[in-house]
Length: 235
Image (cartoon, rainbow, N blue to C red):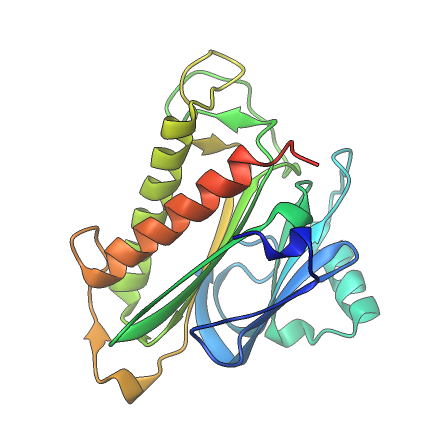
């Protein structure tokens, strides 16, 4: 679903307290408590703990030698706690963000994706390379309520990337450099966060496609990527 095409606020239907808001040039996702995160985010990438997840829209012409400095300034202006924030950057339409959710007896899962594919690329093929980050990108936030072991977090990232590539294959998106089916864009980013909530009574050690967690991750990422990419040029 794409709630921001008509609204500016989305409240999770399965995970109480999770709220996503479209505010001017950013989407902010808030969780009821901090999550353990693993990401390749521009700001506070790698391992972190966060309760604020920001997708900041910048112009396609954005070019900076210090994106972290720019983000810190913005967080200050937005009155967001930098120590609790993970931030991605994009040039894609925020109004066309796709949100998909899932729930199970042993977990809850929230997924939000924005997509701009002008720099679509196929991994493993010959192509132009760039030294610095550039906007335009498929950004995915994958938030998990439950206990997810560290190896399972990496496993979930693998499953998410596979699902993204499958969605782009089914859409038929091509790398403009060589005409081959794209597997992503040159600047894709993903954040996975896990609450560690013990109330479900299960610790998930794996998140491959044959597990309940992995199957849900794959479905949500596939559907959100497919919807956001497919509709990116619509008004």
